[in-house]
Image 1: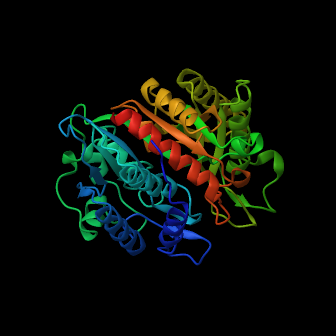
Image 2 (image 1 turned 45 degrees about the horizontal axis):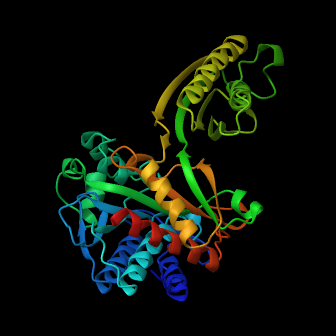
Length: 412
């Protein structure tokens, strides 16, 4: 089967989608359920209708566009990603997987293919945690990984609940209706930019993901004693920030201490009270992210960080509490999907390497309900979540070509 990928069309569509933004170009800001997001969704649904796909939406805004196969009662093969974008980010994260899946379906249609299983494009709601503080909201609900009652109680920075915000965006119905039925999908594949530098460094056009790391978030509150920066002598201080600084270094040491390249630890939030240059910090709140593809190793690092934090607090005479906010399990790619991607890459005459995803994606949750996998394409310097995020048109074309061939295999 000869696959004709319309590279110019998909690049033009990526440019059009990037224009639905609350930030000036080249930056993209498209927070879920914002006006920009709603307009982008409407535009995308129009593209799907033009391709003859049957479009439906669920109660949280997950959107499905189905190309019906010759055996429509069989579980479908799905592919997709997200289009919400964190503030001042780029135009390729998630969007390549959505528009790439659409172009893969169109290429199969042009080739005269008739899949046995239906092929469905999935647009997931709120992969980014920007608005509600929880990533992969749509896929969590879709796969039963999030209690609908807990989801309904989520609030954004303005205090609006998820139920209020989704209703204003036109999505109604109980969140309990979002979950997929048993055997809802035969397989799921997500095309994505790597968000890392390995493929570009190796000059290899494709990466087949074998495992997806998952984060655990640790919230640490430290209570010290404030005072005047000039009047309290150094031996008498109970500085909450200095304790927090040591805890942050303990996060780094814990991640490095495993000796595994796949263990990473980050302190991305540090809130200091009262936040005055001439006042000793009395209270600090930090959030630490620890992730790995090995669950036991990640959790051992978390335990080590907590133990070290408690020892730091005792030595510095401050009070400390550590709470695990979120801990998702890593996922292994389904053999069915990995084999289909390998075969498709070979069929297309394109080189690939296997690798792990250190960022997490909707595929992490889809792996709970169906064999799932990811196909990576290079991005310049590994940069993502920035306005200068970039994927070359030829690499996008290669990714879409292999995705289309893999979908044809899985749907046969």
